[in-house]
Image (cartoon, rainbow, N blue to C red; front, side, top):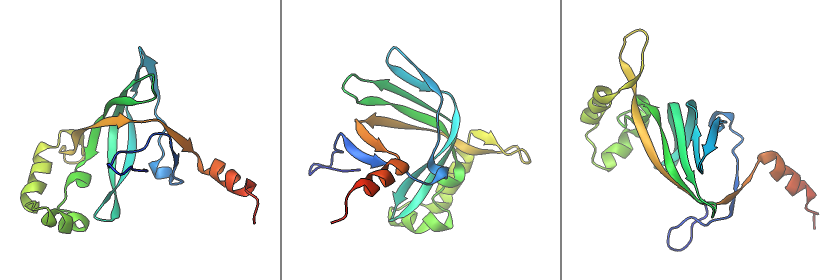
Length: 158
């Protein structure tokens, strides 16, 4: 994201869709009275934590956005996130957890204790936690990688 000097994302920036098919999800939904509501779907979000990519895997995720006339939107993404994505005691995330002062064993126990969705068929234990993200969106230009390649090819070489 392009950020201004005050740390705010700039509207109307050009964003390229990733080529990674694991991070591409098409949600089905409807817009009624200016509110987009999607049907449940599984999806994966990438985020950077400590300089390397990490992932949030959602099951039965739903998106609800109030769409505004100026192109902005506000709402929520909610669903069940894998406990392994949240549990920072996993080997690859443990160093980061210790840097921010988390007690890894206690945190790991809490993740398992509060898991409330996606039952393991063998054990009957829940493996995911209900999770919600608040979303504020601004207008942007979305460029699909095929279109970006066409644009680059159309630019004359100097």
